[in-house]
Length: 505
Image (cartoon, rainbow, N blue to C red; front, side, top):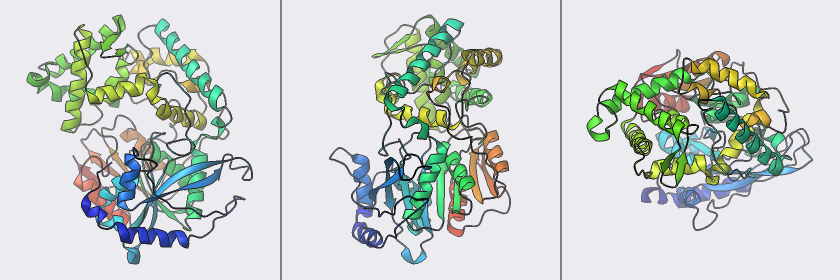
């Protein structure tokens, strides 16, 4: 999140006045039996340590809670609270409308996102009300935390069936902990109900149509919204969109090639800086260092400060590190590999701030509140195979070509033991909604092939390609002026490019 400058504070008084006016005249909303309600806009900060809320308040944003049905098929039943922020348009004479935002994940809080997006949008931001909505069970929106002893559940199967069986037990335990705490709400943690929530936001704000910007999983959410509520969107930007038919508990399958390509690209970069990092003077030697780290972890967990990093965690760390080819990101990952290499040689290894934060998220209960809704939504969207042998057979087939990332990308998730099956079928995306899809050719997470599949499914869309780039999350984040300009032109005019545009790194 960008820091708030003194210049922003100078606009605080008129912005607050606009918010007060809009709250006073906000129309009542009633949808599918949901009682009408007004939003009570108030300051976002929830205490002296709430820096994100303070940043929103200083920018002139205000926050509110919306009451929505837990089960949209029973609008008169149990309800939950959703948290949303709004940074209003300051150019009211040329206001375009409301833009709802999603930061991805699933499970990423979005309340503070209007500040980031305002910076990316530049002048056109003054013409939109930017709404950050924490999806149900995420952030401040009736948060769901399964009380896990660890955080992110993504792990490699490891080298043997014994190690895979250990993962089976771990993932079963995670699912059982969620069932014990939240069996009453887990059936309603899914993308389709989140899309229904978004439409209630649209109604309570009095908008006939809304614009939408979503990253990664947020792009999938936006596509689902267009499918479920045709004709209710204006300008739609889907950044780093994956294949909509592959989202769910096995979404990582088939991304091995892209992840390996990203690792090789980073290895070439690190080899040119062998004097700084000492990881190898050629790409082949850098990759040999990486493989030696994996082998060492298979023999004995690596001790890094207070953490033990084993053979099932190391491949996950190696998969996410090289996913950004900007120099600062590559240098940060090189420092992480340096630390792993020290630990692999049984030398004292202390994590830097970036690695420490990552290991806390992955290995300790501090990551439970973020990872729990990620699992709940993925498991609630699409049924996973229940037989562990299905995963083991896929792992073994993939291991031959992808010894490092095959056992990670095909491994079992808690969804195999989830207490409930999805209440609805996955949404099949096939509609002519106008949308601008943004993708980098080297995206190792939601791949370029996945974005092309989304483009084919949304027949009214255009695909904006950033070539020769390894990145995930591009508009306003990667720093490519060509991409940012083309997206902002679309947000200003509402007119898609006549053909699929291209930008270069």
